[in-house]
Every structure is written in structure tokens, then in C-alpha cells.
Length: 294
Image (cartoon, rainbow, N blue to C red; front, side, top):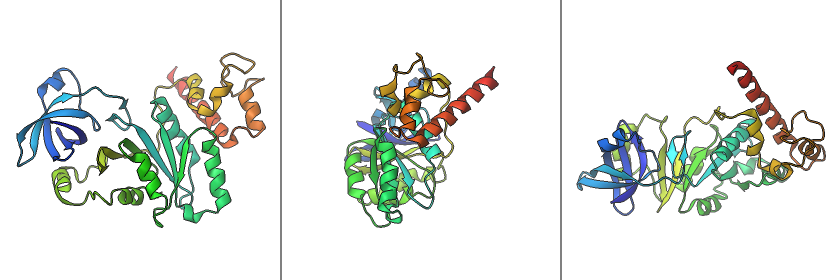
């Protein structure tokens, strides 16, 4: 029987089998021998031990489309990053850090600005323009007024989506609205997952439709990308790509070099100065880390 791991805790894996329910499974010893750890999001084959109690064993992990390191997850189709327009004001440094992490892992991103009812139209347009200009898909919603929810639902359908964002932006309210049809608080799922009640540090998939899952991710508040060289950073700013190889100096990192077309584009207003300032700040941060390493 085939299903998807929606939660793993203390050696137990909870597998969602469409039209059959959630099975509590243990992994066979062969995975330990092969040093393969099942991940949330894995598509797996299970053998049923007891249909009534919904218990089983994991017998096979199917090939992964991708594997995220942070959060630890497999087969992610896209990321939905939620920031508020106001209350709290958006932290663009944090948003750009998150975008770099997803670019590095080749995960497409949808940016959702929530609480749109608190902002003036012009303000909202200016925020959207910055990131649309970088090629990102932008949505605006209001969880409190239940606006824009259907659009989000359509974009999530049939996909596994990582949801991220700082606290207070309305992430839970949005997630709850998306889950209205399949409430996590009822019945079998919450009984099965009771074991993990106080483990918000674990990633977990929430079922919001058939073959449609949301992964609520703990701990995105101060993320930065590990193991990146400062020279690689420019690759993860999609708006710089069209200038690659056109600056005066080959391998230009768009910081101090003369004849840099990225800097020119920023001065001319073709590229966002805010995004560029964050780029320079991240570059300097990586440079400092490099100095400390040696």
C-alpha cells in the first residue's frame, strides 16, 4: 500500500494513504543498515500489521524528487512564504534570506503578503513590484476578511508546499482557513498524532485536500544559508541573471567593481535598491565568516 509520510517522531512514522486514512508505522531495520532515514514528505510503501488499529511497517522509500535540509523534508513542490503588510511591518532582510535558501535548493516560491486590508493600494503595489520584478509569483490576502483564500487554494492544489514566515503575520489563520474542509482538530488524525502534541520543532504535513499537503515549518526566524561562498551569492538573486557576463570584469560580484552593470541598473531604478542593499549586506556577512574560517 502506498502513502506519504506526514509526520515522524520518536521512531514512528505517520503515513497518509488516500481514501484509507493514517497508519502508524515503524521503519524496517534495512533503512538503518543502508543509512537511509525516512523524511516527512517521502512517498513510501507500507505493509499493514493491523488494519483495525491502523499500524504497519515502512518497507520501501520511493525515489525522492528533492530533499530539503532545513526543514528536513522530501518531495517539496513549492514554498509559500507569508509576510504581513503591516502589524508587524515586513522584514525584507528575513524575506530575502528565505528566498536565497529556496533558490539554493531550487524550490519555486510564492510570496504572500497577508493583512492587505491594513495597507493603502499604492503601498501594496510598491511592495509587490519589488518582488514581481525579480520573477516571483506574488499574492495578497487578508485572512481576517477571508480575501484571496481561493487563489491560494488553487495554487496549492495537488502539491506539497512548505509554508514559512515570521510569527504574527497570520500564518496560522491562513493555514486554518485552507484546512477548513479537512480540519486537523477532528477524529483519527489528531488521535494518531497525539504523541507529538508538544513537538512544534518537528516538521509536519497537514492534509488540505487530496494529494495536497502543507508543511508548517518551525524555526525560520533567523535563517541563513550554510556552506555558501560569497562569490556564489549573486547566483541566487534571479534579477541579476540577465547581467551575468556583461560587466566590465569577468566574475564581477557586483559590489565594489567599476563598470558593473548591476550597480548601474540599481542607480537607474531598473533593479530594487532595497534588494541590492540586502545583497551587499549578505555578501559582507559571508566575507566575515570566511575571514573567521581562516
